[in-house]
Image (cartoon, rainbow, N blue to C red; front, side):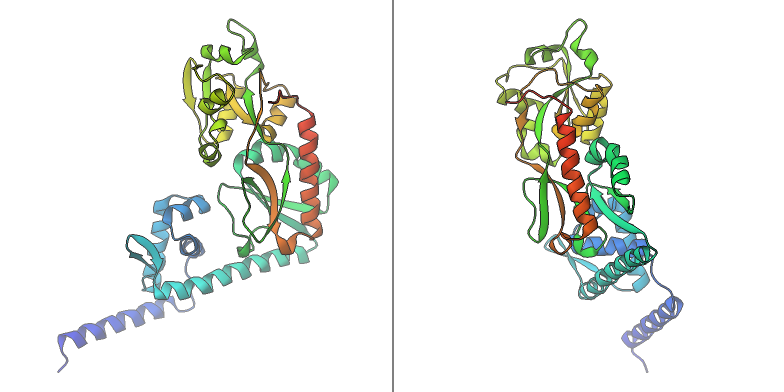
Length: 333
């Protein structure tokens, strides 16, 4: 006679066999696989959610669905840290390779049709306030190169083969990448032109006490205090100046939009403000502009640095940065 343990074991085997039979010839959801690859690489549900631009609960749901589909645990907790299970480690290696091959195959097929597609990753604010307004000039200069621009805060992994080049902001670039710095990066006050007139015209830092000070918080602000009002005022010798009220808007693009509408005074970085300043949507009421340690870079894998399309894009970005800076006059420290 079978023991109860053997009976339970046989039932589990039959259930697993039935599940495998139902899945035969089918593949799991691609979204679930992408979610698992991101979690396996970052070992964080929240970081994966940020990279994929979805909620943490959505990533968790995708992982549970994939584990249910496979009938195996892919992740585990060790001392409160997320880790891959033995099955998860094996599946992660294979999935990563498969996604890279899929990206390369898709890119190759597009190029075989005669279309040259350059895939660019860039943060949303610099894309909206600087890159996009200039893309018509790139199209005119390079009519044979099509662009795929993805605006996201996630730090891409070039090894996945999803992008050819990226615009990044920071103090340093990781090894293994070709990086070219472009554009000045100062921080200075900006406001709508109408705030320089009226009952309390903005002419000096002391005039800020009559206006709303609009701040934004991001990774750059955390690293450099001068990019927020308290730090800028202290650095310029006005630590006692306090605005009529404070307003915090993030990401940085929201702050700039509010400032152009006359809701208050903000602190802008050079490149992000050049378009709006050139069209008089924004003005710099007073200085000084203070240099920031973080810079903008065009980056790509070292192996792609000599690719004609990548090189053309990098040279165009550098030229556009110089042109845009020449359009505005900013009081410097």
